[in-house]
Image 1 (cartoon, chains in turn brown, purple):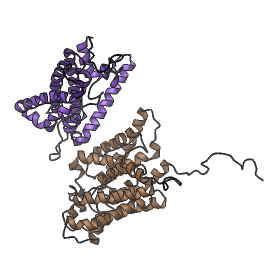
Image 2 (tube, chains in turn blue, cyan; image 1 turned 30 degrees about the horizontal axis):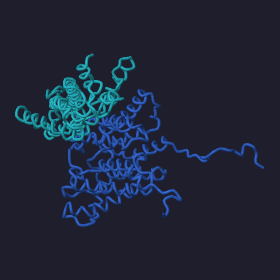
Image 3 (cartoon, helix red, strand yellow; image 1 turned 90 degrees about the vertical axis):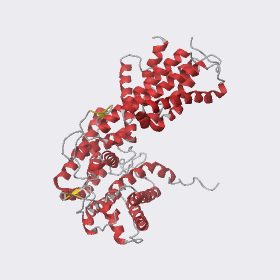
Image 4 (cartoon, chains in turn blue, brown; image 1 turned 135 degrees about the vertical axis):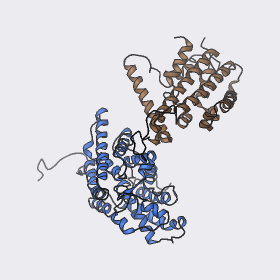
Length: 317
Length: 240
């Protein structure tokens, strides 16, 4: 017999997930910690100062804006922390700390809050801020100092047709931005996110595979010494620059990636092709940031095209 | 306020072409990399605007309605050509800086817009003052955008190095210019920022009971059309 309190009448939804934006963002922030820790180990104190500067100013900007605009203060959802941390990981450690802070203000205020806050931003705030800084302070943003010596990144060497040490690129003891150097640290964070169900392989997988194929084919055209599908060349491209950080942490941003499954595949392919194009035939050695923000802008279009048809709609006429 | 000063006030503040009507965005965004360019572009446009308003107002009863657009363009293009030659002859540096955007004054929507909506329906003197007001409003808008972009983007004001630049070679502290502001994206950022600012000022003034904002955008912009109410439409309806 049904007792009174077992029979409940209510409208759907009956099952609610405990997941909140705050949970997810916290997990992303945790997943970024290995890369951040390795960056601090690799680049010492300046890296730590940069990470603190970008994260603190991102949170502070969000707080001040929402206070002044009399909005609900949402710094507890960790999205500003993730934005600041990602921007910090995308900065060279040799850049002055105020540059990172300026980038955070731009990313949070202009890219995110002015368009309506979390969930409304049209491109990844951290990458928008990075590109803003890259255009404004090209010199400082592309000078990478490692072990006291300012040298070219492995990608720049690769583009110039010089040999690179793939093993140190895997571990991360190379010049580059704070968080992008160590592939292993990034993969640890990515595995954590996949196990926790925060991201799936669809976007990063298609992105990396497309990029590998693109580089495998067109690397030969950029540098005739390299054969088609040269495994060493492809590995070096995958381990160098920001592609790992971009593919696992920035391309998978919920707000700025498609929600349809087919759309995510299209998005991944687009990212791979654009990154390959920029890296091989563009003016600079790196192109992950621009590839991601351009693809971000195309997301509404991709979603519209790949919208699944409801059952019974759009049958034969 | 008599008609003439009302026209100037209207162009400068109430219907500022840059910040309120959002007209002539192409030169606004493209040439305002420095305050000098802004002033140059604004004044060139003003000269063309005043002269074309004057001539079109004079010819308003002669130009047949069905071919008025080509007629306006011929008038405007003639004045633009004159201004272009004058600039090339006397201020070649400005001519080089503005480049393609001088001939493009012909298709500037402020000029055609005023010809169509004001000068072709109103007497000569008022049209001249309408041109002056609109032109000055445009100049003020471009100069303001140019000032902000130049200051942030290179630390200068009218070419004068206001903020001493940092020198990384000698380690001297100073201002590091945010180059993006003198590139294309900066134009959009500054235009949006200044527009928001002037809306804020106007709204605050309106709250205090001044009547600055009453007619933002089209309200008064269509004053010339508003006059048509109840009359036969195509006949030139003068204000007097």
